[in-house]
Image (tube, rainbow, N blue to C red; front, side):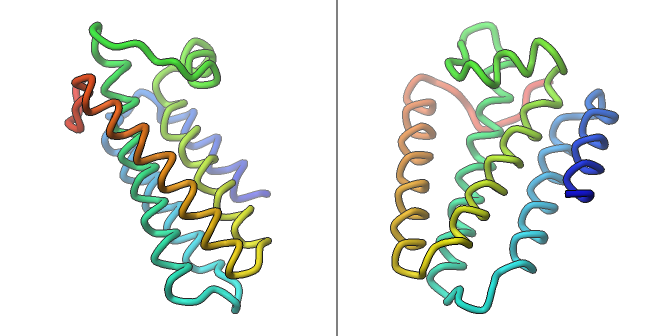
Length: 144
């Protein structure tokens, strides 16, 4: 809990720093935290699936940043839209970091078979969003 509060405060405090650096720090933090916190019943497939889920979340985070830096696109997620209004673009990596931690927490509570199903479903969902964004012209590069 304490680490999450400190991390959230840091994201808010440095929201005016280049978004690219925030996303990289966010991804590293989430991956290290979750990788070191796997319980003993995570097999290699579970860890690979979680890594793939983390990667799809990072790609979606980059695309969401691209959407907000462009006048051509519109974000449909009401949570992200309201967070941007209140906090600014620093909310984007915070949102995706919390979602990734939520995916890890839910997965960690499941048995291995169900964990594989959940992580596969989350990867499929994120892949659909990423491909849909890409087909609409949303890029993966950073715009400032």
